[in-house]
Length: 456
Image 1: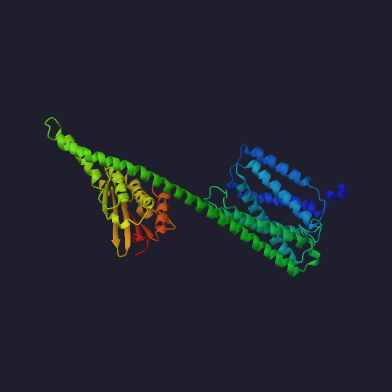
Image 2: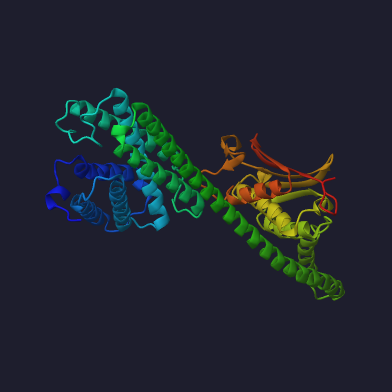
């Protein structure tokens, strides 16, 4: 087949100019979500170069055919060029680039389908920007242009506002769950391919069928945006879960190390106590100094009588930490009640709970308020674990999904609290947090289990 240069660059062809219009639509839509992408420096120069190159190449793309197949290929090529230009100016991986590109194409297609639906319902053939060769000089050219601009303005602003609200706290658009992304991309491309065949057979298609496929296209694109939002939400939850699991693994390794250290210290404390008794018989030893050493040993040993090795280790560590910081750690604990909780889970739960309380009270000047109360007891057929501590401005604490939201101080309640919540859910328990009358209360109820792990 021999192509004529004049036909390939026929400036009176609506398709020749629409490829430029399509690029502008895509570029504006991409700019709305581009703020979530990191910039590649020097950004201004890269952006200007990519925009100029993008428009130049798009303008140079020839019109070899007006068939539905070539039209699809043409617009997919422009879309691919758009992705490359975005990658050139943004310091992101391809998953983030593809996510934003798919989002921009979806927004553009929603606008296109709504505009086409309105034009079809009004019966305006002359002046249709997408399919008429008379979109400049046609009878309804200005009306069509007005509808085109208004539809795009409304759709772009609404989708941008919703997207900004949903992605306000999202730091990265990088995706790891490719299955869902491929599904949304497939829906988009199938919709576009189907639309191309419908448009090119518009003369043989009734107004009802055209309207039906426009509504179908709008619905499909809205579904794609919902899928993309759900992908981001899922990605955020999975990231938090990975962090919590990493903390659990770290706590398990820390527990093993500290258990060995405490066993070693127990042996040394035992030997030291016997040596002190022998030393007391000598007249030249300072009895007051020996008394201080013995009291320090007692502080360590008194906490190891709960009936559960994990609880003993946690309280041994935390009691020394609290004692050194003049914090009163009050414990009413029956450690045997939590024997059914796995070692790593129990260590993480108690260590995070007490550490959160420690961080809340360590900077309080009033000694009366420098306290942490830990309770483990049976309540009916449940095991109750409670941690209380004084909290300044307790009533001002905000909660989201039942967990406190820290304001600028991530030490207080962050991933540690999410780790506690995950452990409680694992054992089919319930967790309740209250902050009132200056007291922060963490209340946990776990179903008591038998040695076989069954709920009693």
